[in-house]
Length: 115
Length: 112
Image (cartoon, each protein chain N blue to C red):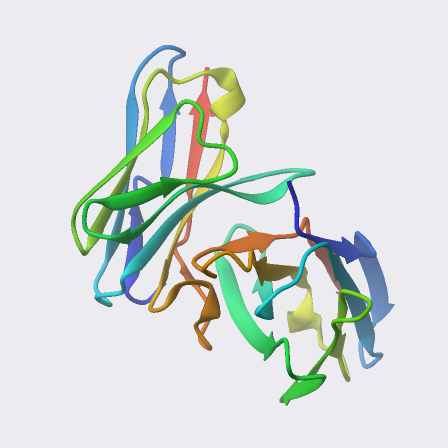
């Protein structure tokens, strides 16, 4: 999607290994979000950032950490991957959080499989 | 916990018919948004309606909001095969409105 890229697009990893997913934006938006999407659960917020070095937990943050050292990059780390973290991960950006008239812009997603 | 819940979970109609999806939410909101997701892709923002608005239009989309019933509906008129997708409502949490909470979505299939 224009202005936001996620990497990698697909990843298979072993249980117990650390994994880092990257979200990169070129829109200079203040807000960045990590969601996971699972069948029957829709999208659930993991962590979000409202500025450089400013982050907060979402609904399903256990087992995940994030970092944002510069405006354009938001990293999601699975500290020790488990099979329950097999999911599709979406990054989203927003100019003004939940009130933006333009809504969120989503990346194309990262499909993570933990074996 | 989910703020918005869509109904129905799945909807299948013939091309040219109108499709209506509903969303209910639990707490007060500043705005409600609708998104579309094509298979294997990220979500795309369709329309936002603010809590002081009752109806909004965008092309073939019509969104209504009833804050007294904590519900919204998305109407797609004259459906096309390309409208086949999942549709999600999302609400801010009215706590600084920094983030959105998404429902589980309605899977819409348009049959030719």
